Length: 452
Ligand SMILES: [Ca+2]
Ligand SMILES: [Ca+2]
Ligand SMILES: [Ca+2]
Image (cartoon, rainbow, N blue to C red; front, side, top):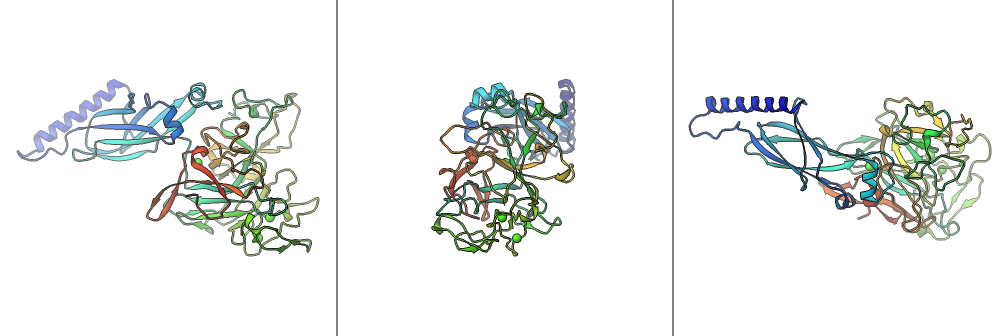
């Protein structure tokens, strides 16, 4: 719509309103249909953005109830725009700002390769002479969904005194006010480079693999921005409505669903026990567990990988190398995500690619499955520790602008967990600004616990 058209429409609305007001009003009646001016303000969700990014020049769109854009403009230095002469009605407000990667990186000290888009929710508002006259919109990267990764216990516990990698788990939380089904949910690791090696091609800013150079990668795909690449892929079972998660409740997916604090018998008949039970956790009441033995065609299943008959097993689509259980990288150099297969068909039919060898060698074994960003529900970028070198990110700012690390590092009994943002009618709403540096903190692993 051109400005002239918009002006014409606005004039039309105004004229109609004036006519209605003139013909419909009795002497001492308040005119209900006179146009009103409203202020729309934007702010960035998350302190890091609020501190470093400018609220000026953000595009604000106003749509009618039927979805027609009735106004578009950009915010001033205070992040506000006045929308004048809106006729009383229901409107939808939304704001957008796109940063070129170089601008975003300069302002934020980041290593993004592609444009970073911020959007707000579509806020539905009633505008009338009696209504609120100012509205706030929060700018965020990427999307937020009902299900979020709440806790990742990837470090495990002390190799001798604790349970090493055996007690690892991922907890997934329903952050919404309605029931969500866990059935069919996928969990995967986002794989990537940690060090540069002349064998492979890398992206210039992030230092991450340049997957567009992988053998057989279609040239029309935005291989580094629109996809992530995974080795481990597991899926929760269920027929669609078998595993409801209530609002404010979570599910725990255990590597092995036993009480790791007590001795148990391994599949080889040998007792597995820990010297210091306080270092580990009880996962006997987990909702799901990874039981890898049925998937191991060659080699020996792991003795500690027992099958708790009361805890349903996940479907294992891809194992990391020859992994004999769901064993997460205890140093945290692998990030984790949950996703669905909407519009894609079962993950078993998805394409995989190998690393981008600079010599262009043919590799058709599809080691790393290509997961569309559009199918990602939530993702968390992990690093090896909160102080040392930051490894190249696997996720763009549209999934996770930051990263988080468990304080104690590998085998420390520490987990990363999402902070609580709000408590609404007793239900905790966890923080999800798609920046895990701000959304997460480190605690001693505590299945179904909360950070704060
Ligand atoms: Ca297991
Ligand atoms: Ca089981
Ligand atoms: Ca998120």
